Length: 484
Ligand SMILES: Nc1nc2c(ncn2[C@@H]2O[C@H](COP(=O)(O)OP(=O)(O)OP(=O)(O)O)[C@@H](O)[C@H]2O)c(=O)[nH]1
Image (cartoon, rainbow, N blue to C red):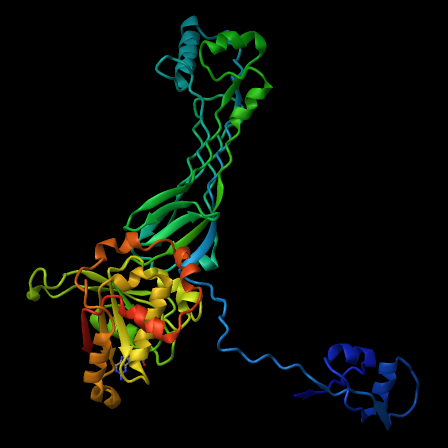
């Protein structure tokens, strides 16, 4: 590609710095004279005439962007909706107050003794008192705690990418003008900040310490405790202090006691939220295989469906209510299905959208492989997905599975359905097919990181790959369907 620059009469050094390679040519251009004068900063009077001006420009080869290497594993530039770091801060405690006793007015001479004593008794009793008669001084409010809880209405962590900082409010101060009155109230206790997250969210400290797995609706964890509010103290002249201390313990002895009046600061923590969907069944397959369409057809879920790969960027969940007419034991009446974003070869290494979503299979008890029966090589597609699962976590292949050969309404697919079924049926061992690991599904899947490195080292050749996959249980069923 060739490019030329001539707008601001740059010097040759400027041009050299702008372009990447050696010069090829120079040009003569025509400019109105006043433009030349301006550009050369020479002011001359005279009529506006045109004359040729030799303008040295360089044509240069602009560096072209390197061609993408299809074999290179691309790092994941996405902001995943299922993993996020947030910072939360609980509220500081409010401040108490240093109070002094009200100045006693001199008794008016006109009042009788009875009135004075009555007034004194009223004042004395109007302060809040403890059971032992000591005066209770107002407390400042506690700062707001921060709690993270699992909410069924939430289905992604997307909003935390938009807002990643959450602060609870500070506790209220004791609202006082410095004098003890009967009207004083405690500072308000700040409300707990409750942050809803999808069911299935794992909460960890940013540095890695596991805090909670919010696997059930309503599960919650206190992640930051609000600061304690300060207390109030009575300030007394030294000669009256002793007498007053018999009435209340909250008498300020010296200046260092003022620290007690100040509220405690709240805590600030950085947390990692990781969403692992809670689903009984995971729909897996290559992009565009029809997973979302299948989910939409059998449940009330409304996933995005489009004729291009990676329409699904976030696992979609659907609830299968079952068919009670089939009788107990034949068909579980309740199951949650998760449609995972399409896997591609290299997904376990981070290619496509893969690895981050593979973790969503951790909690599933069964896998449904959705295979596009009209694709060029559906059997190979099925193997590719199995291989990716094996590389990420071989336990996934131990789980019971069903293969759905989709799109059999397409003529090429319906013709080869019997042979495809046979071929897929052959992949996998018949031993222990029914002895499902479903109960171990959650426990057996060790930490994601266990499978990110070691297992993927030294990619096996194709033969070995096939052999290894065949050692795992074969599918419980292979069915041909047309979701449309
Ligand atoms: N002819 C036919 N087309 C289908 C069938 N099922 C799905 N499709 C089409 O296949 C395309 C891809 O379907 P999706 O459900 O988005 O595929 P997906 O596997 O969820 O794709 P990703 O989101 O990339 O993982 C859509 O255009 C669907 O209309 C089917 O049974 N027959």
